Length: 257
Image (cartoon, rainbow, N blue to C red; front, side, top):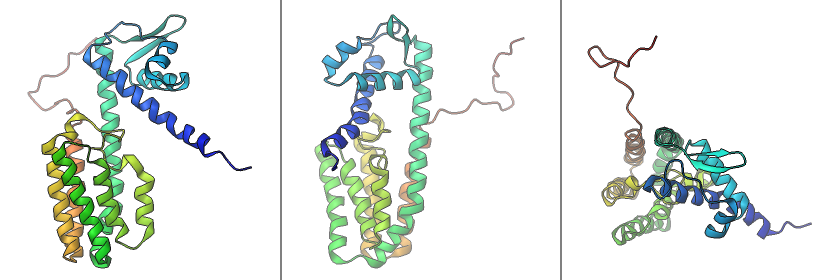
């Protein structure tokens, strides 16, 4: 019996719909549209409002509850947690989100530094043209103020393709929307990483990689890709909360007996 493609698509869409609903509800909580102690709309109301199934609503609520943003009270409903618990949950969520993005970038460093060098050695004119096309598509979208994530991914994927080793491409494809943290589709994007200045900085790093690949400079391409991905890791590390200062002279936490 042949599987129905439509059924497969339904399975794939569920987590995406749940993630979108999480983003929407999280924004309403952050903006004060849903205040601490307030009861969320019922499952039936949310399915009607957002046009999703009950399963999607339950997945979204479970995610928000795990992040410490809401609490389900049996027989009563789901409530937004008080501000202290809310802020702790939000910080915890951001730490997980950022740390996972750093982990993915670390994996990419193990793959893409060498793929850039191989692309510099092996690319043919058509492959180099494809890398340039992705670069200029990023530039076009950047100046239009439109999402650049797909063009960013295409730039890195075309470099991988230019190695003429299909496994480099397969690995990037396996990472999927986690590859580019600044993409709106990524689980880890944030407003800060969608600013024009931030994306312009990425594009300058892309240009250095492109120039090294086009010049047939393997070591230069390695260095440029390493610098690009290392800088991305550093940018994400800066978003992690600073640890408490236990140095001499620093104010220490109050002791309890």
